[in-house]
Length: 595
Image (cartoon, rainbow, N blue to C red; front, side):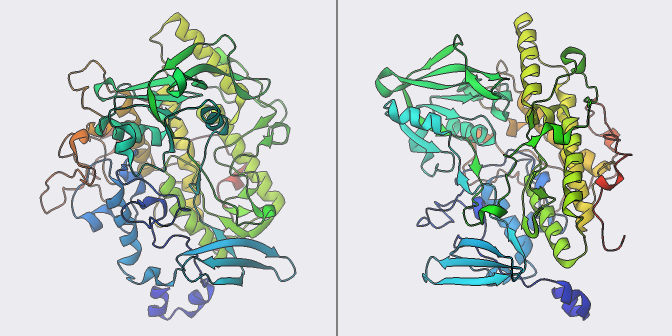
């Protein structure tokens, strides 16, 4: 808007929307704020990170093209970063040229309802201010839900009830409630429910704070924490495919029971004759079970499923559909899909951000390995819809294209394991058989599957970038460019850092994946290489960025190097992606220029 005003671009200004933003918290930053230090401790209805959180993925995933790390930090950085410096970076991105950017945001304001007035073709939005107690009702032409997918903690109610009814005497908290984590874990035996990123980070924090032992329980054993090969001082034990079924030891212990995927019910069930494991003297249980989006303010008819409503298989798959062969096809053969298919990238009720039944309602979501990049690109895509730079097809065409996207997911090994319960059960059975034959067996194709899966998410991201006019380029849906391949490679190296940890090595008492070699990690915007932490991660203070003492100048760019000159992964590139020659409209929505 400022640039258009300076240029006198009246036509461009007329196309821009007048935006009203409501924010429940008292300051910007959302979940990236720690309630204990820079949030508002009196607000109990917001979801915040804990003070000492560090990123689990490479910082390169969340660097913005219009404001680089060099622009902000003026020095090279480690691969992984603590919460506070990245929050500062994200806020400065929008305030550096517009110091009063947040002045117009209505902070301390809770949106209590959003309804669609069919007669006037307007949204009726009711709000309530925490401080003034003022309640307002206003109307708007468009509505964007950007409340985040971490709106409220998610608990497995069966386990929560089990602990309560069984008289568990320890403390139970969610991963979002770790303001006093040292008291919760120091010198104690602790159980984590869930094995994804929050479990991984909190397990490392617990070790740093002096925990005696951490037991990580999960029903699938496919999370990041379960894939980690070693933990400092051997203080973490992954209990894969096991969850609590009984409170024992007079309320101070938990009995875990083995679980298996039941194809008939398409649910995880406890095995009648399955293995059990008793965990004694447990003082804290931490639910690392993620979050749910808060949609309570949205009229029920306008709420998306957030990937929890499946596609009917017969509506999606063509007759006699078969999956494109992959290395596991020889062992699994043709697996008949489940009657219902869930999805990682496609919501049955949404088409590329917009509600199919009412495209005036939009949702900003993340869906791939690169969540903050997803959110940024999605915001651009929403703006493109509003200004008319991108046109939407009919509702029927939206649904057709969603089904085509679903076919792309089902051709990817990892995505299909997430989408199709029958396929996952078949693969799990195959893995168990191989493991019985050889206790050291690991799927030799796992690395290739990971790389291909990362590229699938990257292709969806590339398409959204192109259609929104986002100021960065990673290629197209059918052909990723070198920048995209570099991004995929760095995420693969990040995963490899976890698997490369050796419990028998001399440095196993202190080494974490964050202490891994930084070779191969560098800015995709400037080429600035990452640098090692200035000390062992376990020895860093929680507020220490861990940045090496650097020269004032930024190291030279390495963009003159080709991918072939970087550390080789010796993996298939899968350059061309799935065969989309018969569905050309899958690759892009119609833009104003093309029409």
